[in-house]
Image 1: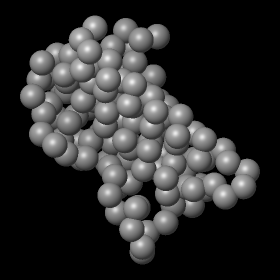
Image 2: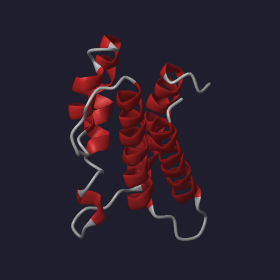
Image 3: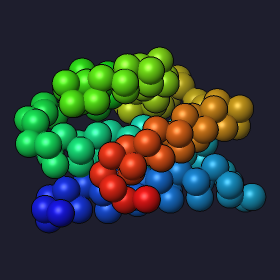
Length: 127
């Protein structure tokens, strides 16, 4: 595996564990951060896969933009479009006043992140 792909994966895993830690925190959980890092986890896994396949990608946080690039190699991934749309909403806006994630929102985001992470790890032959 190329070094750059491995680095994307390591960063994705960092976001994965941060999201879970913030969601599970008994004192002072940060649901906004859990949702943000969930989105970041999937974004970085997508970029790892695209890098592995040598598909150029733009600097973007929009998961559906990255999905469009991924579909040329993995057409069945279209089934994740709605999940990705939801996750993308936590890429930027959640970090600023006016938007806040609830525990219920975060639970749904974590479920979607885990499902997509599991599938992308299969594609990358990590499980």
